[in-house]
View 1 (tube, rainbow, N blue to C red):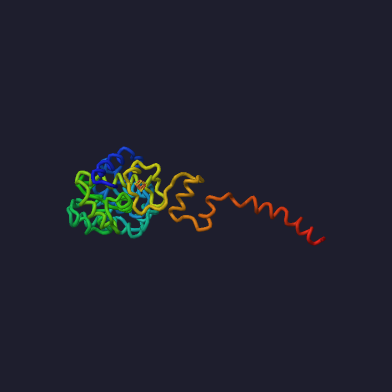
View 2 (spheres, rainbow, N blue to C red; view 1 turned 30 degrees about the vertical axis):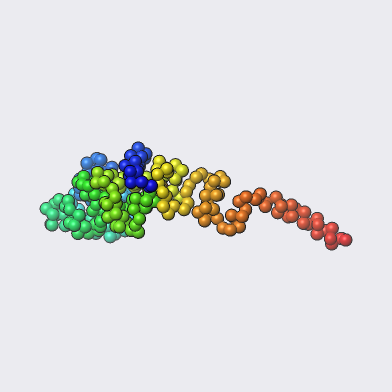
Length: 269
Ligand code: SF4
């Protein structure tokens, strides 16, 4: 991003181009309970959205709330949430979170960052997403997509998602905080992907500085793709040299076809 005034433009363009709704935003739009949003967010760590969504559905079809989950056996929860990543640890987290919600917070999910991060398996990312999506509070949840896109756009210059969380709070107007995760996750999963972002198809192409982007997708087999690959260091030296030369295949074909005849002439002479 070249100028500060582009921030609003980035968000407007992203809003108009959304094609994917993450599972937590779906729950929030459907007014799911704070407890369901909390548990589903905890389950979603290092797990694909489709897998998380189905696992949470299975879990909540058997145990409706914290009161029911507190008496569940870890093995039963494991079977319901499998194959989410770290399902054994997450099954224990489900039981421990339920215990804490009932015993320490009168059966309610706390609306406070410090209290939320005291729960088993709940870090800054999960807590901020719960505050934003379950309680509608102004918070920024920074996951890997938000961290990557914020840096590529030049909104921040940071090394970790946690640094990005605090840096974004300094540069973004408060009214945009809640939208940040939804818009950047949606764009990050479909266009601004970790490897080979589709810059030529991106609505932000003209205002994005593409910091750190080496390889962009521009279609397959075209000269542009080959040049793009060279600029990004994707080709070796010999491949670079060959770009502007005709392919050597025809010369090789000539030698391999006529070598036996040439050999015969020399042997007989
Ligand atoms: S896809 Fe490319 S142009 Fe679009 S936000 Fe990502 S790096 Fe910027």
